[in-house]
Image 1: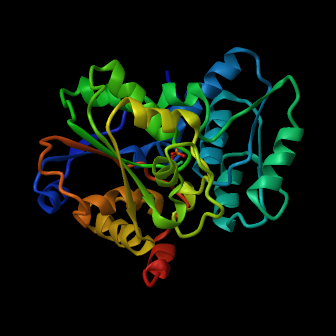
Image 2: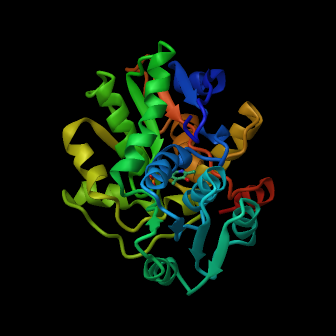
Image 3: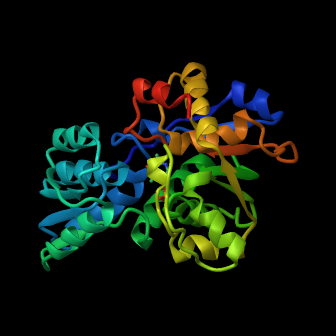
Length: 304
Ligand SMILES: *Cc1c(COP(=O)(O)O)cnc(C)c1O
């Protein structure tokens, strides 16, 4: 039994109306850890557990860390998550609820990650948030589920942080004979490291990440995400923070599900009709979820 669940595939009338085509939603926001991350992280942790790992380490104060904490609790493996001082109280509480040991260290993710890596012994498994073929293998299962329900998307919309979701969805599409279906890869302007690499024609690091979509905050995407853009049509799209936040609020009203701005970025492409999707007849949006946002925080960002 995988640690992730088989999520609903729902048709969205509001999003279909906004875009003038049929939009399907893969409801990853309903995963037990609050985001799609548990698919890949759960798969990786099961493999590490089977190989005898005695402890899982993570340096993510976001949805990846939460997925590791959830996987550890389910598998009975202790989890240590090292997070920087900037990590929100809410994230620390959620990690603690899952029973993970939370170590607060350093001013930024860089220092927290250094400490996490230094704790690693041969009995531990360090779980990366996006750059690991085991993660992509787990993420790919969401596409298997869509196809098993009889839906063959002719376009996919998803958000890009470090590019693990993109790499996994690409894998899932390819193994279901959908290797040439275009993927719309959405980022907020302050987190546009994938866009930067595409513009430069090479893997590129952006100097700073900024804005509300914190789960997209990777300064450089993984090599695999960049390579995917050479193997199939990938359309990079940027939205503003304000568009991502208002998409979250509209989505909450329309679909009764609260998601992070990282997910709102993908939804904004559809709500704002940023580019026409009318040439496609079955658009699949990955509702990647995220549990670091609250109604209060979204309302507070509204003026951004
Ligand atoms: C991690 C995450 C992303 C980005 O995924 P990557 O694999 O890093 O590209 C998007 N949305 C949410 C809610 C996430 O947790």
